[in-house]
Length: 146
Image (cartoon, rainbow, N blue to C red):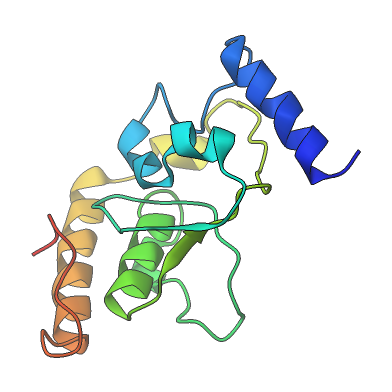
């Protein structure tokens, strides 16, 4: 079938509790702006506002700002990228008949080695640098990220 029959199958599995929105039980804020309740019945695209720690799976042009190198390894890569895209004026749009399947897996060996103090320091310096690069005159910082 086409996208719509595939989406209907996923929505049915969601209703049956056999699949859930990515990170729903682990870290719901990471995908909250996507609004999966709305997505289930959406037939047209809809824009969503950036919220702190949003890390959707995205489709974008190759010439958008690249991932920040401070976030190599585990943690902060998608979050920082979406933050900078938002500060740069990009609009996040949810495509109603598109979805990705993320199969649960054991954590990679690299994830337990992450130094969370270092990651937090990297995040703080990244936000400061990004806010300086995108001046308040061009676009205010997203809520919760000042």
